[in-house]
Image (cartoon, rainbow, N blue to C red; front, top):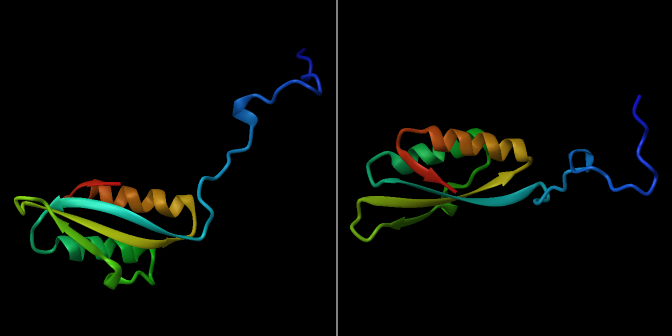
Length: 102
């Protein structure tokens, strides 16, 4: 039989509450990069709207690589939870046109 911890014993890390780094809801920027080809920005916009129905495409920022082969796209979504952001990152990262998402 195990004894309960003493009242002044430190709390083990696994039972300590997780402190959320973000305060939700929050407008959250995400950078996405891929090959600069037709349909890339549309695909990113479509995914963003799946997770943020009020996503404003006019806020998209674009940046071409020096040689023009790649395109960086920054989207800002209205995030309401960590789960929403995790799901959005998964959707972006697994899209065939996306090289990476940060």
